[in-house]
Image (tube, rainbow, N blue to C red):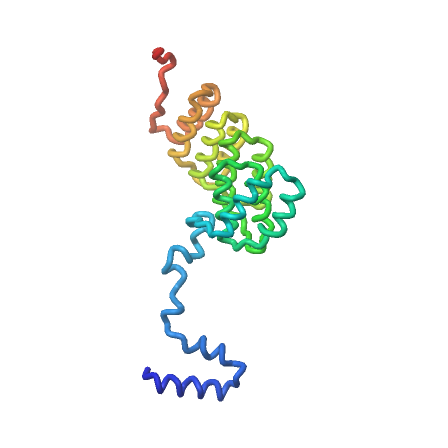
Length: 240
């Protein structure tokens, strides 16, 4: 459309609809490229969990991480900083702060930000959000915090797929918490999802230090997948 004709169309629309409708008319006349489907961009797709996107931290997020670590044992000063600075962070910065604290294994501060995220108006329960928290807690052998996070997950009815379930069970086995790992395993077995062989193999490898528990999981595996073979490590490994 020529520029002059476009301008005439704009003025005519404003005249007919009134000046208050200028924003609506402007929206109507925008080229089609401004209304591309969200699925055309992986970062904007609603099907892509915000917890799976790359978390790049801005200057404000870097400042908050530094201050949180400095004030971790400051009690009231930390609470004031949470209210004055953390609550003002943009969603992207808040998620990046949480990811960075998890990466550094700051359990106490991760739990503080975890609680802050769950209070945000944009928060929606998500499997990957809970997976990242549980994996961090497993690395640090934090059972009390784990049970708190797991209770939240169950109360929000978050569905955990078979692969993620297997990874979390393995993390708690590697973290030296086999009793809780088996609780997670029983939860996995009660899932309505069809069982998959790969998560079982992941868990069986993590169960090598726990032979009695491994036998139980191995029996379940062979019943579910009778045509498959399970590798059993030698009972007596030669001394180096």
